[in-house]
Length: 270
Image (tube, rainbow, N blue to C red; front, side, top):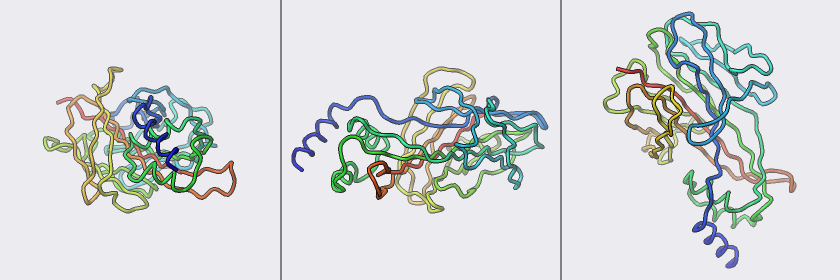
């Protein structure tokens, strides 16, 4: 145990690149006219930079568009890119939703696991990993993505709400219609329960550019709410991650399961 703790300490001091990749919905346009097509890419990457991925049903659990109280199933075709497409809607706030199936990864380096849990601020780890008697390498994590994106149709009036994702970021402010001098407010839920005192990561950049993103960390309050400043003409991505232990039945089963919540939106130019 002493030797493993020493290895852990060295890993924390000499950690390498962070082992974490976000998945997000990237609308071609965050503001569209009434009855104009809505299109959005799936992106996977880091620092708000990532390549476009196609729609594939075998990796999909939910693929929806919420608008004016209605839930519209997206009639996607295999290989669609942009992955989310809709012919058009009336005035209102459109909320694009995508939930993946589970995927897995195998840790070949303990440092990568350390970097991930440190960056995402998981309390009690990696001590819990060691206490469970888990190996330093060769262990498996499963993960699932829960992404939302806010698109303004016409005037864009409306409100985001809980839609029953296992982990979910809900926008309490409408960035297209609300006065945001006091900042943008979001609320984080896990299994329908408010996530108090957890970290959210906010990425921002000028809309329509590929400039490096500004990345800032915030914490939710006792009600699971976080508020952060926003700038007109910028686009934003908000990320929150939970990590759960899993009891493996065999060596080929995951021992951890991570749930990734993501929300994208833009703030119009004044």
